[in-house]
Image 1 (cartoon, one colour):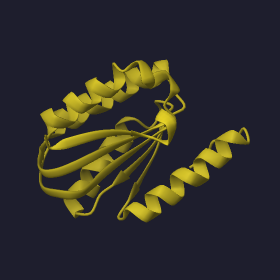
Image 2: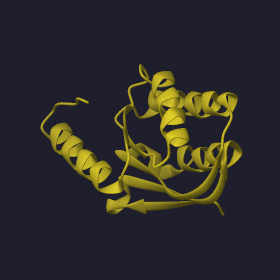
Image 3: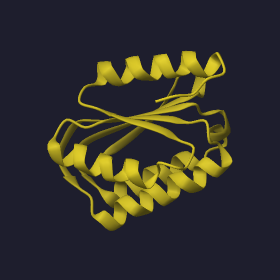
Image 4: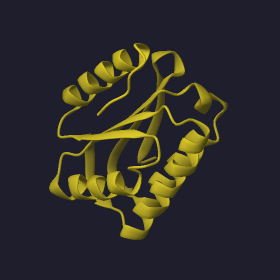
Length: 136
C-alpha cells in the first residue's frame, strides 16, 4: 500500500507515510479510513510524511476532494494540527494549494521540507494547546 497509517502517541497522533507512487485516490482512501475511525475524536495531530514518495500523482480536483474531507472532519474535531512534509517543489506547491482550501476549517496546517522541523512544530503546537492557546 502506498500510504501506511500509523497511530502514535497513545492514539492522539496519526502518521500518513507515503512511499513509492502515491495518487490522489490513495490519499482520499487514507483520509476516509482515518476520519471513519472511532479514534478520530481523540486525534490532535497528523504528520503527512512524503519523504519516501518517488512519484506524486495528484490532480487539482483530488486536492479539492481531500480538502473537502478535511473541512467536514474539522466540523467534528476542529482541534487537529497537520504537519505536511514536502520534499519536492511539486509536493510543496500541492501542499500550499491544499492549505489555502482548508484555511478556515479550524485545522491548523503547516508545510515543512524535513521531518525534524515538522515534529518540532507539532510538539510546540501541542504545548501551546495544552496552555489554552492555538496559533500558527
